[in-house]
Image 1: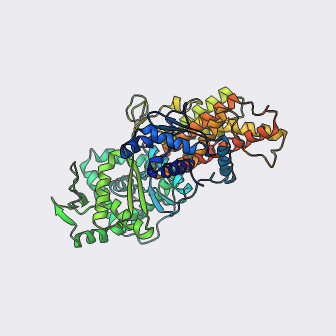
Image 2: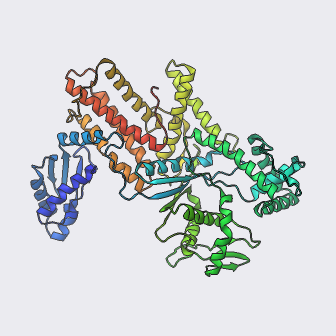
Image 3: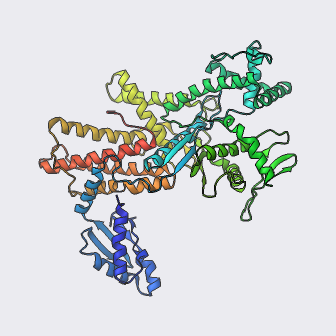
Length: 589
């Protein structure tokens, strides 16, 4: 379905051409003065320079040409050369009727050329609990994936676990200290290793920090951990079996925590999955003359002539031959290209890693790990800060576990719901969980991803203002009106959205009409905050209309049925949007 702004622009461009001016000057935008008009065209200002005349002479001609166009209720030329436009209410009602006929997508066309897009938006380390630092990657990545899926692309999410390197050696070393008799440490053991892990998730989460702390004070212990890491990476069977246990126990716990955030991944791959690709990749870089030894390490130059800042070489192997994050990230690109051949790979990571990913992307391109047309995109996000403006911490100053943050907001939400209504505990807690998730996700996603933001629980859980609970409250209000209407009568088959009877109704209709262009823009710019801005404006427009209009007491049946159809369309637009943001609405609040 054609976007309404494109339809309007086509008419004005046609008028430009008919009057002897270039079509490009007829481009229409949303009005920045909604008190004066709904859309505007400022092309006459630029055209005046080319055609050497006063701008208003051009805008006057265009206004005259469009005065009888059935698309418009108002076409007004305003000095020095602005064109102010208002849509005809009947045309707008017909446009919304067409949207309504496509309940699944509301007239938003899927892309003509769907892509296969891989998105890397997890990055947790195994054997460690998720903490608040993992929140933004998960929430932003999940929304970008959902928006892409809605637009018709094949989106493949990969958690990309940190399951390689010294942390694994530390866990193995500490486990050997505590349970030296386990068969995994017997180099002569030739039997099958046990199916059950020799630890629980709670034990595993305690083992790693203990080992990490000790390695900072005990050099001999650290060397043993490094030796264990080397043996693991070079195929020692007992250690490989332990790694499998660590992964199984950790991934089960990670899945549970991600599910609480309504976040999922198509792939649960880790750095260890990239290891088999490293030897051939490194050899290729050497053979083709890209990699060379610098101060003992193997590196690839990635600087470019246009660089205004220093971009260091990308290190491939350390002087002792060990791999680094660069190595595994590049090898991960190799297997992604080999197994999936994506058109694009998006990395949702902390914006402070931009230089690192510049190195990795340039190295991948220079050495031919990706096709020239394969897009590598860095979507860097800002810091989640506390009210003091510093990175979010617990009251004790530590990094908060993500599940503690989520459960705390669930409790806050339950308290608010219980204070406002008499509700059974089971239903209240279920509703609180849904609303709390909206508070967390909307609180994050309503900010442009690259910007730092203040994580303010009091504000995010408020039912007023630009918050998730406010959006859900609006949806629940619409559901309540529809239920009351349906309880007393059946909507007539011939019912349809009618031309607006008031300014507030037309404002609501105009907001709905922006749906397909907004969704397309949100995908193209990987910008979930655009979806948030849209639904906030839409919720405000609905609530304004609701407070001004006696919907259920309207005496004229056709008008009332038209209101109900408009409410159904508003609800559907809001529900599609919150779904791509990664949360849903309860039946009541």
